[in-house]
Image 1 (cartoon, one colour):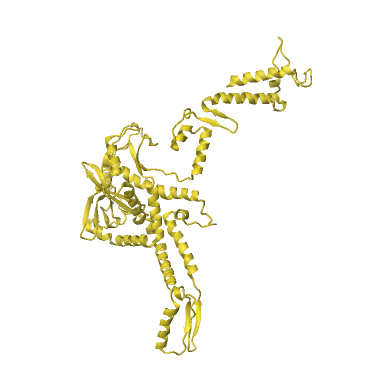
Image 2: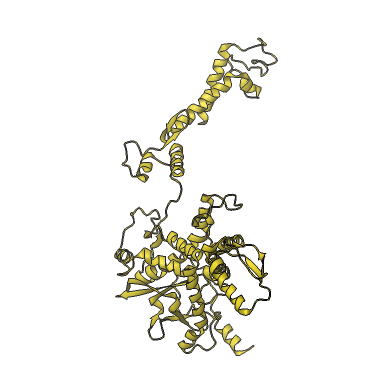
Length: 507
């Protein structure tokens, strides 16, 4: 046994006692207790000097610059990024108490919560909270990381600012323990931040590391091919989409060949020269090598477009791409649900988790409130009203609740839930009496129809009227029935009365 193994076994933590009370409070672990042993991917071996991290991120700076150029040049990248960022922050940010998830405002608001609301209303003099979070979502989708600078006053955050993701470097040790951040703008202007001064939000990375991998980085290959495709289309249309020609000028001199080239560019290239014939002299011949390929280029453009938007998880209908007969595309409502579940909600939850921890728990010490994005109903108005109508008729909604949702004042009696059928309306408070009346009515109908009578012959036997025991076979329709036909009317009256008494006794 080595010395290290002996020390580990000697000073190993004591096993947890299972008899410990479940409800016993446990203090939060300290920073020393949660230090990791494993190493983080992508960090250099010698990082004693922070300049090594900065120099190691030079390749990352080139990738970030390419991503920014892709956003500015490829309209499908910018459309997807802007759409997701706008949809995530469309409802705005709100603080909701834990014991009041409906957000009706019944939970008491402490002084810390009041200062949190002030920060949400004024995060800095240039940006509001929605614009700030929209920039965060944009940086996440484009660069894979987003940074927010937190300004503290008397130990509490009083302002938030966005930091350029392309100029930020995370300072950490080999184990990935973050100790701070450095912003290097142009080599001359640098700023250093402590770990508490920056909120770092990153997307998932396949091998981990300090930085995330964005959808735009995954789509760099189709984006590059799309840029070349559009450049080819641009050049084709700039030249008037000319066909490729093979021209045989015979035995003409070089000066004549050069003159023919110049005349061809002037008279046969460009949008104004479309349809102009190619003329040759001196036994020159012209042959068309291939036809125009603009249609093929446009098909390639559409295929690359679909690959790009698939990397971002955006359905075609959300970008205004309407294709009839597109198998697997689904309806607009189905695409919207897929878009919200697979794309919007994960990005929103990632942002909210960081804000709830850094602002509420660490910044203000608030544990019974949380931040969330306000939900917006994207459904059609007719669908919403039909659902409300079904809930009202089934008793799930009251009339006053329906009127409150559409902004109308309450009415007298509108707080009573009702049950509405095609032929009647009932109050849920009197539903027991209504059920009793239905039972009595159905029992009476069964007794009036001999074919629907119970199968047990004893149930049809009339009550005994004599003092002695009654023969079980002596009853209407039985072997010893004296009438051997329809029972007398008074026997059925007694049967109705007995069935009714038994039904009421069972209720």
